[in-house]
Length: 255
Image (cartoon, rainbow, N blue to C red; front, side, top):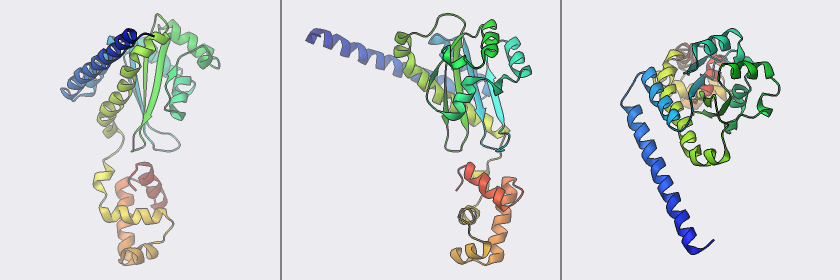
């Protein structure tokens, strides 16, 4: 490559980065201007459309209950597909969801991804959902978000991914930060704000296996006072006992 060609390439890269930054700033302004879930979703869906995707889907999974975590989905798929997906309980076989629950690496849809669930793939394609890309992210509070960008025509090429990946990755985190903060109150109270510093202290020591008596000695309070704070924390967390309270507080990243 000649010096002139290298200069042209560098200038093109700088221009691309500036365009991406301008695009991100524009989207942020749109997100910050609205407060309702539907409005934020519309801004993000429009942003995904600008980079070539018909469909924008965001799923959220809470860390609790452990045996049946609460989930929430919001998307602009057709009503027929949303109903079909729910009736068939496709969330249990959807390989993109399974991938998102186990990895935060991006997933480009390929034939291999769907080779174990061909009926699901065929049904999705019959509803116009053929090509896509999925990525999960997990916040410090244990809440996991999953973003899917999809369309009915034209596979994603290497060239497209190269030019759009920065925007796609940005959308993953923008969607999780903005939508999860609005949706999370539907599932959990703000336990972090409710628990006092002392309640967090006694739960933290309880998580290390200390008894109420030992916690009292460590914190220079009586055993009765230690139990008082433990019981208050358990009640605020909506847990059935101290063990459940400690587990819930840990999963919510309160400790």
